[in-house]
Image 1 (cartoon, rainbow, N blue to C red):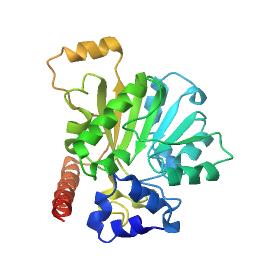
Image 2 (cartoon, rainbow, N blue to C red; image 1 turned 135 degrees about the horizontal axis):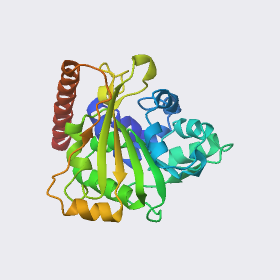
Image 3 (spheres, helix red, strand yellow; image 1 turned 90 degrees about the vertical axis):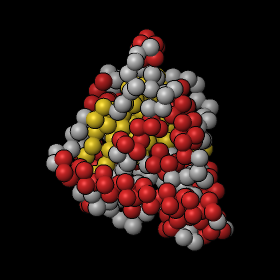
Length: 285
């Protein structure tokens, strides 16, 4: 009936704060204006910039033999476009059973699987996937309550279901200073190796962005692709006994000047402060 959706939309504050809630997404996906929504950008844009190519090549398998999991799939056409590009073993999951039913019908002509599941607690066997793709899911979870514990549980589960040397690829609007504490928590950093590639997208390549409360393209055009490679058992043991505190290796593929990058980070910090004020206000109410 859309009641949960309308309640969550009474203010933009509550709107963002609801991103971690199943009831919000079920109500949202039941509204016609929010069908066929792509977050950040489509698969064709990522393919054009060859952002996935190095990771796919390192797995040393034909695309059709790679087991891919897309988390927080929503009603995006991303997986169908991946399928058309040769990735034919794809499982899609989302916390919203409403959108999963929609996508099962919409893409019935594809050999794609759609499952209602919480990424913090999946039913997959350990070491099931070569690639786990996240386009905005981590960012959405970070908008909700109990962000730190939820993201930690999410990362632990992703590590469990990744194969050794496999990748969790996460496209985010958030720079490393906002994500390092989550992705490289003290009891995670020995399990995987973190890198980030930064890149700019023109407004014409962007779609909806959490970073501007969905009002349009991100004016900085700066996005981040976090690649988390699961270490082998011997690598994890060596990392666990290392004195290194662990950090995200910044490959800095963006050709913007340092000043431009600094300005973009300042804008991100301002957004983060505003989001925290929203959170405090919601908690008071």
